Amino acid sequence: MEIHYWNKEIETADRKTIQAVQLQRLKAMVASALHTPFYKRKLPTVGINSPDDIKSLDDLKKIPLASKEDLRQNYPKGFLAVDTSEVVRIHTSSGTTGIPTVIYLSAADLDAATDIMARSIVATGATRGDVLQNMMSYGLFTGGLCMHYGAERVGLMVIPAAGGNTKRQIQLMKDFGTTVLHITPSYLLHIHSTLGEFGTSVKDLSLKKAFIGAEPHSENTRKKIEELYGIDAYNSYGLSEMNGPGVAFECVYKNDLHLWEDAYILEVIDPKTGDPVPDGQEGEVVLTNLIRHAMPLMRYRTRDRAFVHTDPCPCGRTHRRISRILGRTDDMLIINGVNIFPSQIEEVIMKIPEVGTNYQIYVEKQGSLDKLIVKVELYSKMFLGEAKQIDKLKAKISDELRASITIKPVIELHEPGVLPVFEGKAVRVVDKREKL
Ligand code: DLL
Image (cartoon, rainbow, N blue to C red):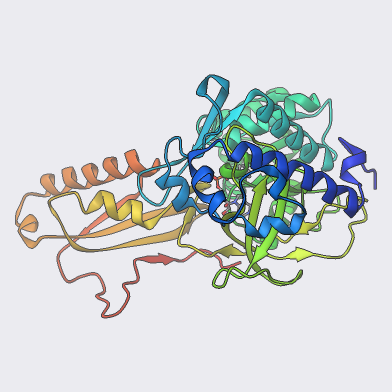
């Protein structure tokens, strides 16, 4: 198998070298962090007042864990270490309520993140001459722009197609000879089911690879994609809080994801106790960003469950690999790549005066795509009204939800007493999708 590297020296460095880089970068990160309101408050309470208080990588453990809740509570500038005049870009991701989490990048941060993205792309064998159609949404979501920059740096020809409009996507693939896709697995499967409708078959396309990520998927889903398209599909993991895609990526061997340890310190903890779990054991992934100084974020609880591989990879890269993401430790739903918290839905519907007291959220597959159904009980007097009024209310709930969670759910309205009542903890979410 032919192996390509973007930066062979660091990608194949021995553990001692990687750890030396980590220590030096962690110190620099603590120096930046001490300029943010959040860490200015937190670090002195654990005896860290200067980068010199970090003497070894073990001192990382002193730094308090950070959560999405911390980001939300400190929105919008509590984690900002520089003057906004030094920031060249922001991205956001959904938070547990309407308040998003925001990340800031300076020009140097963007450059560093782009380099890591380029490294991920090259690890799959994609290179100059390839045509990448980026079907992740552009805008505040990191999936579009961050991959775009990385692919340009490698020298691929990028088609910034963004998501949706399947007919146009297929046309673009045909017209420009797309060889690589960046896409959610659910959308890639969906496109396959529509090819016939648009008079196209896989043979009309030049596809060789797909980078699939932004949502959980199983090994079977990957295999299905590879068989249907006759391509190699590589798992791509990332999160906005760590600069988006490119945190961990599969190489040509496709045996789980190399996590770039010179850019991110990886820990896996028991989500209940916060204690580290041994390699090979499933736990919550905790990441420290070593390359973003405009907005330091250390020991961030991703809520993603995975385990660390200990066996070496035949590609020669020494950065440890994580398993595919096996689930989450919180209730965040990922619907066609979009992150949604049930609490966001509750907040919107409970503000609508006609809505009664009970509701349920259903997620199921419709073909290969996820379908979100929000079942809502109304006060009984509503059902005495005209059908037109009910339709109007459905549209109103749907529109208000869309404004908050960015996707339009199907709304079902019910009379009181129809939805299940729970005496203990209410089961608000019924997720009928494949379990990993
Ligand atoms: O989804 C960044 C990204 C874009 C990754 C494009 C890959 C490709 P967020 O919107 O902040 O960022 O969502 C991050 O999505 O914590 C995981 O729960 C989930 N996720 C991302 N990639 C994978 C994957 C982007 N390959 C959250 N497998 C993460 C499973 C994934 N889950």
